[in-house]
Amino acid sequence: MTYPDTMRLPAQLSRRLPSWWPLALLALWLVAFAGWRQVALPDEGRYGGVAYEMLSDGQWLTPTLFGLPYFHKPPLMYWIDIAAMHVLGPTPLALRAAPLLGAWLMGLALWIAARARYRDVDDARQALAWLAVLPLFYLGGQYANHDMLVAGWISLAIVSAQRALAPERRSLAWLCVAWAAMGLALLSKGLIGAVLPGLVVLPWLLWQRRWAALRFALHPLGLAVFAAVALPWLLAMQSRYPEFFDYFIVEQHFRRYTEARFNNAQPWWFFLAVLPLGTLPQSLRLPGALRRVGFELWWIVVILAFFSMPRSKLVGYVLPVLLPLSMLLFEAWRGRRGARWVWLASALLCVTIVPAVAHWGRPDHADIGAALRARLAPGDRVLLTGGAFFDLRLQARLDAPPAVLADWDARRDQGGDNWQRELLDAARFDPARGERVLWTPQRLAQERCAPGRLWLVATPADALPDAQPVFTGRRATLFELPRPANCP
Image (cartoon, rainbow, N blue to C red; front, side, top):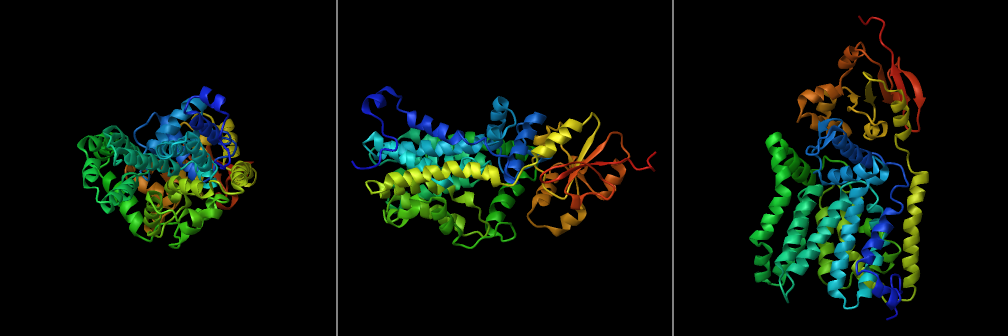
């Protein structure tokens, strides 16, 4: 075979290594640069901040943002990051534990699929090597949001379903793995964790008229495994917060998918541009790869079509297609002249992007957090205004959530889809805490006479007229609000 030996070892050495060494190498490859750069805002600050709050407050069941119940996404990412913070502390690497795990799970799923397809184990290693250096895969595994985690579980669910429903022999064990992965995918980002594997696998079985396999796919034991994984948290939240179902299921799934009022509106062809650009240089042979009609192509088409229909689109939505796409690209490049250099160029692109982002990317609020932490005394309070300082509690290691100043009555009437709306939505589930966290100008006038110093984090343009600057950071300024002279 003339394919480049990107992961081929001498036979004697290969026999001495455990069979899973490519998966261990993938884990090292993903983790190597994951802690190098600052926290990216707003997403990494928001989701990392939620995990830190849950850890700091000892509240593992209900995600909170600034102390308010936060149900935009389910909790699995936060649970993983909390476990990582127990070991590593609240570091950027710990905050990226969930997407790193998701990327590794996608690699595991590809390894399972490739071992089943190719007789030569070296081919499976090569296929994994090509997935590992896809820039969109590599960066998705190092960006702290829910997209790569759910993509990893979806990939494992579909591949496990393939193994479970194989024509030569059906496997109940693999079917249970598939349903468990769908349950974990649901806990990672919501209903798409079960919907997307179903849209990929079930119509494929219908098209092939595999009626017995279709019935087996809905085996009661598999459904029971899914229910045991996915339902306890959902039911616990519904029993605690009666509005949970309407908000989490109806608002955050059906309305967000069907309505045009949410952010990130993009044209229908958005992912048709993102996918080739995010997989360069391997995508230079994308037209040839997509001519290979089969299950992988169907997998790609279903997910691209699903996410292209709503107006709201983000790059991370396309991550669940990377496994089938990488296998098609692997086969398109196999035996081609220059394949080795394409693989090396792709790997080099991955390892240079992360330092480039660390050097030229926008800074987080670590400097403000350190300055505030050095000045805080018992009884002091922290107030934010003008921006989404989601990472501040984490950066400053605050014991309690800061307050947020805005004209919340006006914000409530404006509607929209922004960070203020997220906090207003969260306050619906705990109005009493919402009043303590969401300060109006009238509430501020009362609080300024309370004991203890009052610290304000804002940009100079958003600061109050009498605020006294004490530290200027890269993105904001720390002010002290003086006690008014007319206080009793």
